[in-house]
Length: 116
Image (tube, rainbow, N blue to C red; front, side, top):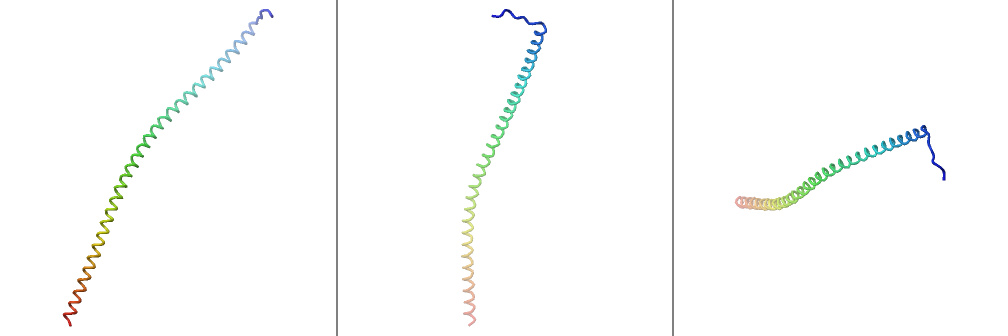
């Protein structure tokens, strides 16, 4: 075994300065890591808030689409009803025209018969 070793004052001061420099460097790295972590946490919080807002807007859009779908069902039912009414009206117009044509034909026949 070797005996006790002694360091000179200059060696001790050099070692102390080296250790302090390393501690400052590590402290700076830790502070940098803390800043990065705080930034990541802040961005995560903001992203969470944005996600909540988007989900809320999506729920509103879904409700509007559902409501639009209900309006379309009512519109289709109304359109089908109006189509049936139009068909009945068109049929009535054909009957009226046919009746008017029969009357006109009968009137002409009477006039021709009276004129002979």
